[in-house]
Image (cartoon, rainbow, N blue to C red):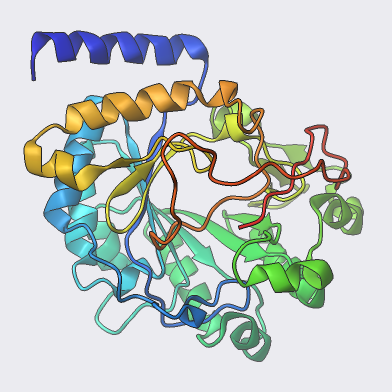
Length: 370
C-alpha cells in the first residue's frame, strides 16, 4: 500500500470519527438458499431461485476481512438465505475471525435448525461470538406454518446451546397480526434468559407486500399491548447499543433479558445505519437506496481492496446528505440476490408521496416499494 493511500485512509478515518457516525461493520449475505419458506420471505417463489449465485469463497472473505480490519472494522455479521447451509461455513467464519483479528464481534442470523453434523459448539470454535435466531412462535405447528417448516424446539435448543457457551444471543421475531400472541410468548423468553428478543415490524418488500395490509402491526400498537409490562421497565442506554443504533431495548422489572424493537416500516432513519452490505456475489453496498455500489471481485483480483474501502467509507459519510432520499428510508432492501438493476447516477426508485404518520414516530415516513 502506497504512502498516499495510507494518508488517505488516516484522513478518512479521522473524518469519520469527527462526524460522530457509528463506525461501519460488514453485513455479509452468504447465500440465497434456505431450506425453510417463511411466509414473509418465500425465497423459493423466485423463478431463478439460487441458480444465479456465484458466491464469494472463504479466501475472498479472508481478504475482505483483512482489509476491513486495517480500516478499524471490528464486526462482521453473516446472514442468508440460511448461511449454515454453506458447506464451507466454518471456513468462512474462521476467515472473518482471522482477518478482523482478536476481539472482533462475529455474528450470524439463522433459523436455528442446524443441519446434521453442524453444531453451535463448532460455530463457536470457528470464531462466532454471537447468534441471532429467527423464532416467531413457540407452538410447533404454528411455527411451522409461519416458517414453512422447521421446528421451533430445535431453534430454542440452539439458543440455549449458544447461551451455555457464553455467546450473546438475540431472538428475531417478525410481528404479524395473525400471530401477535405468538410474538408475545416469544418475548417472554427474555424473562428467564439473558437474551434480547427483537420484535420486528413487517416490511413491505417481496412476498410481504401482499401480507402487509392485513398483517402489519406498528411498534406503537405493540407497546400499547405491553404497556403494563413496560411501566417499570428500564431502557438500555443507546450508548450500550452503539452511538447511533436505531434499536430500542427495554428491560421489564425482574427480567434477565430485554425486549427490543426494530421498526423500519414506521420509524426508520437512513442516517442511523452503519452497515456495509455485501451480497453473495460480492457487491458492496454502503447505501441501499443510492447508487454507490462497488463490485469487490475485480478489486480482489487486482489487489486494490484499499481503493474499494476508501470508496465505501466516503459513501457512508455522505449518507446524511442523501439528496435523493432526504436522509430517510422506509424499507430495507432484501440483498440475498443481485437481481435489482441500479442504473449509474440515478436513484434506484422514485420517491413516493409522504405516508401518513404511523406509530407515533417523529421521523417523516416515506413509502418505498420494491
